[in-house]
Length: 261
Image 1 (cartoon, rainbow, N blue to C red):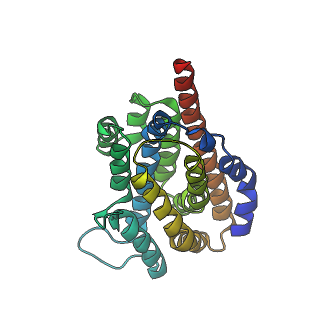
Image 2: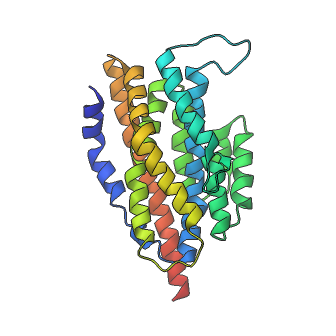
Image 3: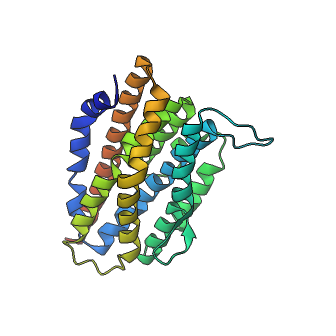
């Protein structure tokens, strides 16, 4: 098994995700706010996948010693550099999570609830239990549970597969679909920050991070057939979890629309 085999294994679910109805249904300011209020958790857990890989593949403790494969260290550190300390549309250094929070504020979304929830999750020693006991909507819970179950298993090739095929490989096309949908609306919200966020990810993930993350999966799986099979299964699970997340957001948008009728 190899990268082509994974692509074949996930092709159907990937197509379903890239043709999700949600993209064309973000039509109003309130729709956008509803989307962002849930999607922020996917922005955050992306960073958790990334840091799990950095913690495992590089030395992040003292005293420092070189750890593991230098090529893997380079790949993950390069991705972390941009994701954690990129420049926003004004040239300020921010993580992409912080950019997203700023975009939420520009769209008129209070970030207090999301930040309080995420702070509580990040401070927990039992994050899966914390997610389960939280007041988060079910579609967010299942998404985070899927991510942190993969992280907690501690298999680098699985984490890298979820990061690559469930995020980096997917995001350029997915965000392009979202932007295409937004371009047909008459949303009055300041779209510059969220548009910049989407466009920046399309640029980075398509040109740099996507190919780098694919190489990372290949290095971690090597010639181990079991690892390739596990990577393929995790990749599919990550995409299915994203579909469930988007199904939940779409349901919220439709429910809000019905309340206005």
